[in-house]
Image 1 (tube, rainbow, N blue to C red):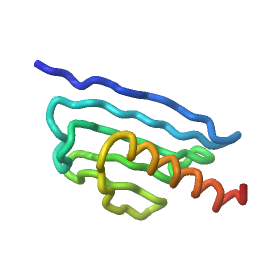
Image 2: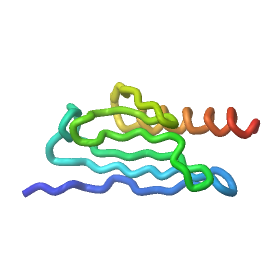
Image 3: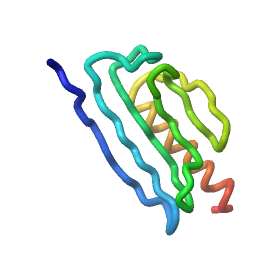
Length: 99
C-alpha cells in the first residue's frame, strides 16, 4: 500500500503576530474534487485568525478562502501554488498594515 508522503510542513514568521503555515503532501490518489496527487493547506494567520487559506478539502477540490469568502483556485503545480499563495499573503499584509 502506497502512503501519503509529507513534502513540506513549514511555518514562516511574517511579523510579530503573523505567520504562514505551508503543509503539502503527495498522495497516492487525488483528493476527491482534485485531479492531481497533492493534498495541501497553506494558511496566513494574523492575530490568531486565519485570514487567507488555500486548500483542497475533499469534495470541494482546489479553492481559496479570503476572509469569509471562498473562491475556486486553478491548480497547475506545487511551485505555482506556493507563489500564488505567498504573493496574495504579502498583498494582504501590505493592504491591511500599510507596509
